[in-house]
Image 1 (cartoon, helix red, strand yellow):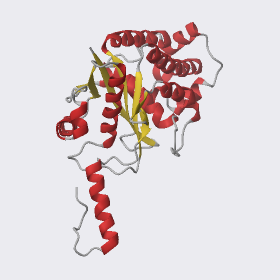
Image 2: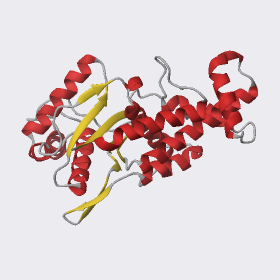
Image 3: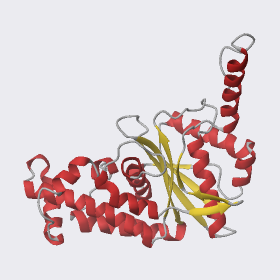
Length: 306
């Protein structure tokens, strides 16, 4: 049997997001269909219809944007049956929606997000995330970024903790074809050529799957987790602005994390990564900088190795 890690990201466009987040939700294959059915049922209960017909996707930046909270709070809480009717009418009426319809839709979006995270608890989903400051140094194209290797490390620890036999499959939101090939090549190098990667390949299938996010419910859950972490979760030395209205949802995401210990050290499945370069590249640059500081530029290469 196996666990699937569905992975998506938030803030990768380097827009106004305070942090870039690579997030994953891990679920046992036996629980996956149960989660999908219940999320779809929650969608109908909250909106009175599918929020995501055709090409429309339940993206977190649409569900949880600041405007959603403002509209949801412009009237008192609406009774669930009436809220469902008005929210459905709002989705159908579009620009002609009334004030009460817009309020109902805002309240429905927030209730749907809460319901999804509660379903993650009942289906034993675990959250994983690498949180990166926008200015984090990045590796050359031949290297797998540390946020990915971190995610694989914590997923590996999780698999070891839950069972001696479970395997892990990684499922990504589909990127542009060239980006997919690049990520596949980087993962192959990581799992086949590095000591840690070879060890983790015993439990994690090294070749990922790619799916369309608007067709895959669990990827949409990962998107929700990534967005909430970027805008609402603050741990350790995270100093960038946050949106306090997301605190309730951020607490729910935080409660889904997996914690473990290895060789006396504590590890959690959600953490900040301040340098995305792998160790071999990072040490090469740091060594070059140390030599440059000690002896000046003479006799050293014009740019750092790697």
